[in-house]
Length: 130
Image 1 (cartoon, rainbow, N blue to C red):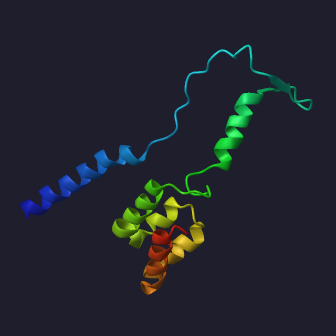
Image 2 (tube, rainbow, N blue to C red):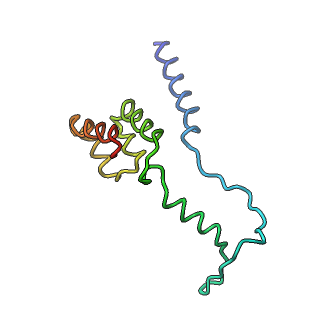
Image 3 (cartoon, rainbow, N blue to C red):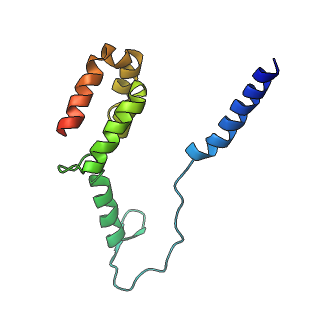
C-alpha cells in the first residue's frame, strides 16, 4: 500500500515537472530601430507601414518548411525514421511531416492500418518520398 502511494506521488511529480517542457511558446525578440537602407511600403487602405525586407523574409520562411523543399535533408529523414520507430503508434512521424490531422487520427485509431499503413510509411521514409 505504501509503495503505491510513493509511486503515485512520483508519477504526479514527474508529470508536473514534465509539463513545462512541452508548454513552450514563441518569444518575440526585442524590436530594433529601423535600418536607414530598408524600404518602407505604406498600405493605402489603413495607412500601415511595412518594411519590405521583413515581408520578403516572412514569405521565404513560409514557403520553405523542412519537409516541403524538393531536397530533403538527411537529418529530416533520420528524425522521421526515429519517430516512426519509437512513436509510430502515435503517428508522431506523420505529425512531424505535417500530414493532415484527420488522417493522423485515423492512423492512430486503426493502429497504423493494422500495420500495413505503418509499413508503407516506413518504405516511403526510407525512399525519401514521405
